[in-house]
Amino acid sequence: MAETKQYFDVELIDKDIITVKLNVLDFIPKRKNLGDLSDVNITAVVDGQLIQYNATTGKWVNVNLNTIVDLKLVQNEVPTKLTATRFRSIYSFTLESLAIYFNGQRLMASDRTIHSSREFSISISTITADKVMIEYIKA
Image (cartoon, rainbow, N blue to C red; front, side, top):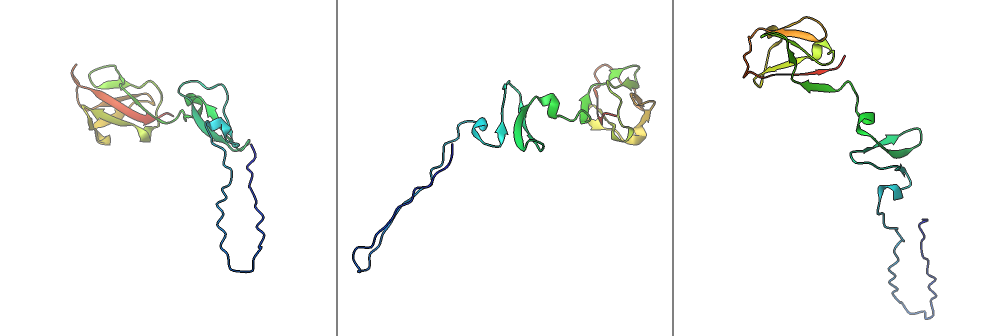
């Protein structure tokens, strides 16, 4: 829908000073949906989608969450307990990114031993009620 402007011609009939007040508004179409915008291309909408800018087309497009999320983002998980002190993560992690939490407290690097890109141990023996959580960036 093209935007249009209205123009008015005013003719001066008398040479006396007159004041003419015109209220002219540009016609601005109401937008009801994202798809109404010229730089948006929304198709086949489903719950949970996001919009992402596509520099190739110059348009915003709808995408599924797993398409837009970088799969190397920080992972938070409860690792698999192998022994009272040794654990395994679901994915390989970058060694410098591993953070281990024991009952909510972050452990110091000196309190852990890295055995592989998926296995580590902590210097504290855990019991059933203890909670170990880890966060990391996938390798």
